[in-house]
Length: 233
Image (cartoon, rainbow, N blue to C red; front, side):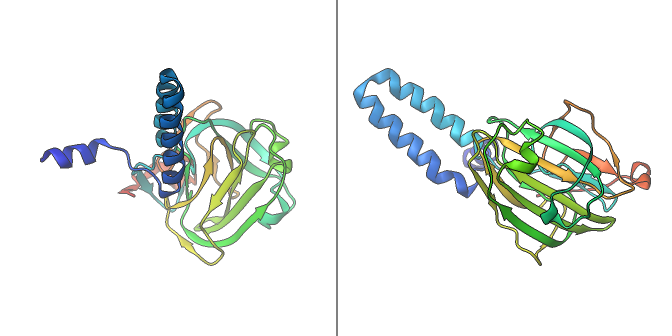
């Protein structure tokens, strides 16, 4: 392996949405360094953090129609029945909801929990309360995506937080997503709520660490008896 290939394999890819912010952090660091040298080193650390925030590594996705995969890096902060937001068009009865909370050090690229056509892609303005509050699901700015999965509708709701002020979703209604495919990004810390179909059983615990596109959130019965086919994307 050449030196160039070794460097490429060691470096984590950066999502294109991050280039502008990394450049701003770098320029500000240099300018601050002219004023007082210690400020340059503080700025450099923040620039490195910004680059890490926008990292977009490849993930080995366990492809299976019977699995629901985590759409976000972070930790499980809530598991239980909740009424889905009205814009999801998933009824008014409580559904099992699993929440993944992302801090400012997590990778923030979001991935499709199941494969299927996108039925809903809806942005709703709102507040910017702390994302770990329960009422953030109803009151905060959010973008909802509903995928018509092999076992029914799966809703993934990107929710802004106290620091996160920008939700990006490049998925539109009618798009056909593959399991683990990137569908959006949230800048600087928040959460994703996942509403799973009836018959799916959560396979996670509160406080468990999630890896987007890799960790199994929930599964339908026979999924535990078969080995999913992995795919790197």
